[in-house]
Structures are given as C-alpha cells and as structure tokens.
Length: 116
Image (cartoon, rainbow, N blue to C red; front, top):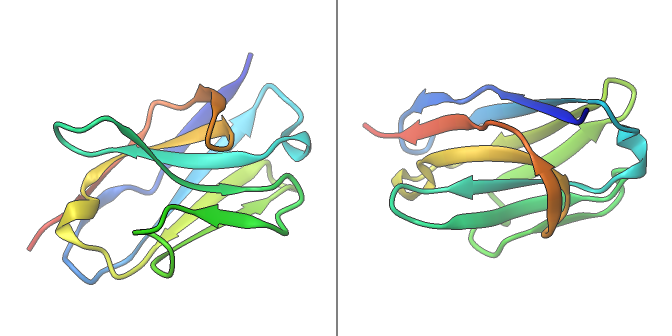
C-alpha cells in the first residue's frame, strides 16, 4: 500500500521559511518522479513542483520558482520542499504526491500558514 506522510508545516511570518518532508513507503521510491501540490483556501488543487526519480531535474510552477526548492533523499525514501520568502498567499495545505504534474497517490497534507 502506498503511503505518503507529510510533516513540517506550521505558522510562519511573511518572509520566513519552512521545510516540508514527505516519508514514502509501499512502493519503489527510486523509480518514480515525485511532486508537491497545494490547495489554498477556497481554491482548487495547484501543482507546485516535481523532481525526477534520480533527483537531477526539477520543475516548478512559475510563482514558486526561485522561492521553493524541491529535493529528495532516495536512501531515506524522503521528499522535501524548502519554502523560502514565504508570502501570505502561500497559505495552503501542501500535499506530497507520487508522480509529477499528474499523480497517482497523494498524502493527507501538511498545513502551512503565513501570517503576521
């Protein structure tokens, strides 16, 4: 059974940083592109970023490029998303996903709230 468990969310001030983690199990992590998506209050699900299976190529949605950094540790079956220069509009539930822009499974999410 595929399991994706996110952690690392919380309350942060504008301009602050957070590092999200996603522990993956139940599939061969090293074989899959992985990604992050988010859902802002009152909005639909939005793709944030993806990373190829070997970690060498990354992809970002336009508004996140330069502020967010996706990475993975294949030895630990863990996906990360570093969030820097956070804005109030980044407030959302962030989900880890097996797959890239199109995914097959996603986790329960971790809440990020950016507020002063």
